[in-house]
Image (cartoon, rainbow, N blue to C red):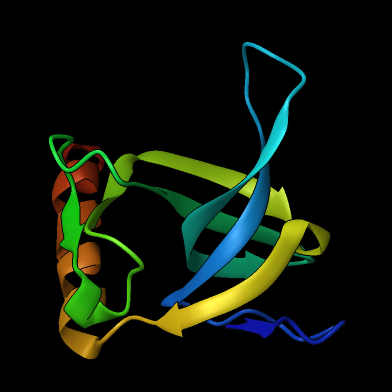
Length: 112
């Protein structure tokens, strides 16, 4: 696990630890997230949960996760680049494509 270099732009496909404030409380916790893209120091991420019963893209220890998890394609949010604590690992090309296809499927009604 390595700290993000100050000023370094996160890359799409990076799994990072981010500071997340929960909507129902003022509590801030470190949680894993997938970098989707960055623009003007705003970083769009997909949340990751260790609740493997949730829908999304499975993430295993073989992928680099600490424990089996799920990338939640229905939990996308924007954070400041300053909220990134550190990079954990980079998703494989296969998993990045699975995320792309999953998001494209969810967004396809916009093209109609």
